[in-house]
Length: 337
Image (cartoon, rainbow, N blue to C red; front, top):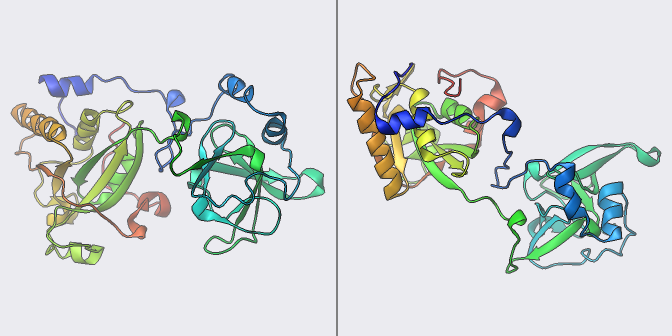
């Protein structure tokens, strides 16, 4: 449903926010880290601080001698960051003794913190591991690791910097400051899909909120007896996208006048709602809904509930990234057009 431009002060200010070009869009991992690729100019001062050995390995795809790396026998709790840019790459929780002579892990810190590519050097076909942010060479991936992945990420100590649990972290090794917002706008598949497209949105998860039972599953929620609403949890960087922008986007993607339904879906679990996490969010959301109502943008009253957020229960794995994984369309409107 197209919303008539609201002339009230708050809503008008939301619609006037400039759009960020795709070329300047930062990239975030779902773990909350900025993984925007660094330029050559960005990397230059970082490389000037490294040892010759780290330069040889990270920039020229070198390999250190087995059983010589300083991190091979490290058993402290913490994580291993890229020696060049500081991005967390591997966790001590995933480290194991492979007997190969190099630090070995069965999983990365976060899936998109490392990238891989085919390496045909030395007349061998191997899988090279690179830092997703600065393209530093880290080592190679093999299919002889332990469960649950069966992978062995074989790394060079000189490509890593270890940070213990109690160590002070540099800003480049910290997640970006984030906020959380909750929206219920009918079937969570489409709401999740489109909100994830927002510049500055780090992660969107589907789940259930505002009900009266604990740990509900999809079948229970669909009965309408638990009181839960299908809800998305939006983690975002407030320095890039504001809560107000998320609000206006939410109202563009669904019909807030429909009661206990949205499009073809019927039931209280499909009601329209905003579940706030602070007094500030409560004030902003309540004001926005009031001004939208007073503007007579809709022929029917707005039915969107605005309440303090209760516990968020993550939906089953099959409901996460549903549209991306299945390719099925959804009736939710693209709010970014």
